[in-house]
Amino acid sequence: MTKRNEIDALRNLSGDIWNVAVDEYAAGYLKRRDLLKYAALIGLTGFAASQGLGFSGTARAAAAGGTVRVGLGQPTKAIDPVTVTDPASIGVLSQVGEYLILDDPKDGLQPKLALSWEADETAKRWTFKLRPGVKFHDGRTVTAKDVVASFERLVDPNSGSSALSAYRGVLSKGGAKIVDDETVAFDLDQSNSNFPFYVSSDVYNAVILPSDYAGDFEKNFNGTGPFKLESFRPKQGASFVRNPDYWGDKALPDRVEIKFFDDEQAQVVALQAGQLDVIPSTTRLELAIEGNANFKLLSVQASSHDAVHLRTDQAPFTDKRVRRALALTLDREAIVKGLLKGRAIAGNDTPFAPIFPSADLSVPQRKQDIAEAKRLLAEAGVPNGFEVTLTTERAYDIPDYAVIIQNFARKAGIDIKLNVLPQDAYYGSATFGSSPWLDSNLGITDFGHRGTPDIFLNATLKSDGAWNAAHFKNADYDALLVDYGKARDLQAQRVVAGKIQTLLLDETPEIISYFSQYSRITSNKVEGVRFTAISHLLLDRVSFVQA
Image 1 (cartoon, helix red, strand yellow):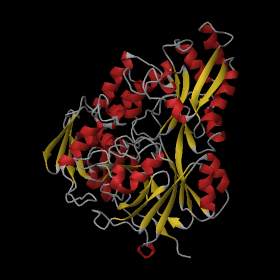
Image 2 (cartoon, rainbow, N blue to C red):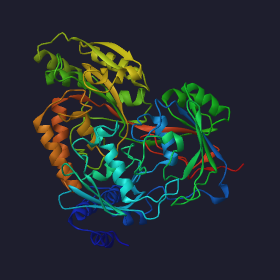
Image 3 (cartoon, helix red, strand yellow):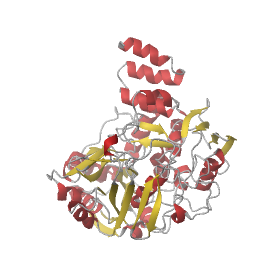
């Protein structure tokens, strides 16, 4: 098929919103993969699937069977889809729980328990058709009642839901409604053209549970996934077996065995000893297996980032010139190459990662400029710099990043003292007034991957955002968020995105100097390990390499 014939065929698939994206593809502004991702977003799931997207491919049937052995950290509390936040628990949930949609890090939104979805003209009402005949592990059929109850539970302020911050201003209690047994409608608080991401694996709490779920998940791990619970041992691990009644392709492995570790170094030792097949990845662990042909490092580019917040309501950061000055001290390329070993891309102090199709890549990239930083400080009345304390968490590469920021800031006369806390102490109660994360003058917080910038934009920077550690309150910004939500096509989104990016560069309530890749380490004896950049670990297509 010629390119022209292909474009004509694409135009016949849907209406005006789709055709704007087709025009961008025809003009070379949009890659084919991004076009297909957009097709899934607006509900053209059949077309996206026909182009070979998603995790539908199978490993060699002859290699089926066996037990996949996984090392994970310790869950921070009881494993409950409604309240879960830690990577280990998300990895466990991945074996048994499913979402309406899976956000594939390479191919975008893929149908799971939802077969299709579409919005009305305002993008304020979204309707989802459910996959028929899906059963929970206890044998009951999944219906719209279960889906509605799952989301009503997540948006209930009294449920303890960890997803409340994601849904604030987007979906409220009473917004999810049964249309019929296989159809669910969502009436949103305001228009949101990216809403499918909010019911996808991007909100990792949005696992579909039975309508009568009572918070006892660890008793039976009752979900719809490709594996069923065999045994669970708190603080030790869990094992799962193939679900013979799974609605899709049956899992290739017979079993998944997960062991919890208190120490990440112990994980790599167990991997090297042949006791594990898959473990999480950190820079330190990657160095331990570097150059060893017995192991593989698997990575996907993500929107994960470590955000540096600057309290816009506390001195010295009440003056945006001071905030911009600190941002200008950082050499982003050096951070990517040094701290992250090249496995990241430079950030531009906004949540719009370059991997987002809606990002306006024409906005100039901020670069290190010590002379300009000093000029801004002098103009702000602090020509000799100032002292400030940076508070952060002892996790991942963040303490090293804090030292790097400290060293770069010194070049402009800014004297940063470091206050590195245990992770649980840093987050505290995660509420304003009782959390070093949300209350500190200057801090660094890790944010996991999302398939769209919406959650970052709303939760971290909106005036009433639940994660607004910068205490940033800007009416123009809040209004632009409404415009962004109403924008129905990529071209319109990109126009508003450019305005948001420009405003945030001017105001600089937070510094985002990089977007990381997300990685896993595996033995070379297994293949087909899949994962999302938000800690889901998908093992149903794993096979073992035959000697």
